[in-house]
Length: 600
Image (cartoon, rainbow, N blue to C red; front, side, top):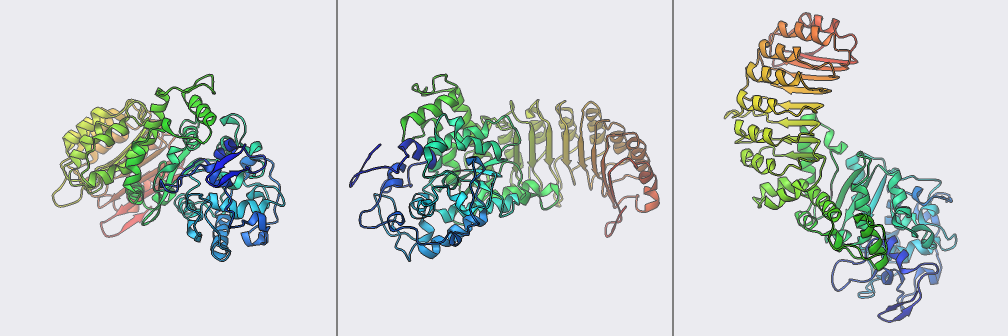
């Protein structure tokens, strides 16, 4: 197939049709009207006045690319590339780009290249194909010593600079705490550029892309600042596969290079968010993600993925028909479909959740965010309002936006928020999804003004806890609670099949009466119990009650208790507890006065 370019007709690379090129590149616009070009043209164009490395011959050794001994990897999906290997490529660009006078492959603007501006169109033209020409292999097979099955699949836009792309993956690896030898599957390096028809031919579900996602633990989308990734149909297909997998553990992260550096939105908590106590996980995730550009968030919330483009019309038809469930993949796809709406909702909802706190702080109209969140089909949601000026208003916005039909895990941090009251908890209680499996609520309040949450609010919340709840975490330090709140909670959890319970009522008026009632109501299904009763009125009666109940709970594996600043201040008081919990794998009890504690 021949392509008419601005300077005449140029034959494509042998064995490569424009369909294969578009699949391999996943995108087709470099971001501005001036430089917009078809990916096949960008890939195939050769400036007559600037001989490329193919015509000159590859004058470098593979060791300059940080290469190993090289190998053959039969399955394309097992050709991941590591950060060390990407770093070696970036170093090569810095060493040779300017020195050898590389020129952009963009036919609209064939200017001299700088190392940090070399994108994958350019990198394929100047490095990947020349380096692999002699062996006719993929780039990964040139530099690897053996199979490199991917830990993560990467969805991206070829117009993003290789250096910026690498920085995003380095930040992703740091946040997820992956080693630099953890492979990422990147199409340009995994696919054999000399035999693309073999790599990406056939139905979408038969491509190397789909097979690589089957090996990975998740997909990470690397976004350029214009968000062109979401306008290309092959990227849309990758997102659809990622968000509709039957494996609920499959993750979808999004990273970009902002003005302040690389930053990402992760699916759930990254290990980088979990370096402090659990009560800070939500706060640390929110702080990390707060630097994600709001312009990208607003743009992604309004994208209609069904309008995405492809260089080959047949590809667009197959993918949209596949998403909509049409039997004939080559027919004209429907212009509207509930499957499109669901995909748009899932993507927009993730961005709405990530940008929610920044939008609140900027006093934005939350109606659009609420609409997208409600239609998101999210199963897990974490939001942090720590220190917000008007927590009550925030709760009001949120309770109208929860995706109640699908939500299973809810983590809300209202620590130190003003205006959180009994009415706020009542509103939340009415909005809790029936299918909720885990709830974490932080309403800690330590400032001199005190908390507006009392027994009334917590009792209403307790009565509304869904019957299917398996994990409950309540941080209520400094709230105006007494034994009434504990007995209300006890009445409810007696009917739940909880596997984990964490209750923090530090610095409240709770005494033995309420806590003993709670202990006696603990379900036999419990395997992890964490009670923080610092600065409360508990005494030896509580210890004896806990020892008696926990001693017959054979499923209990972990017990953590804090009773600092109470009448339980020495090891003798805790002896009965230690003797009755021989079956527990882990027992931790912190006791003592306010200034020093004894870990027993």
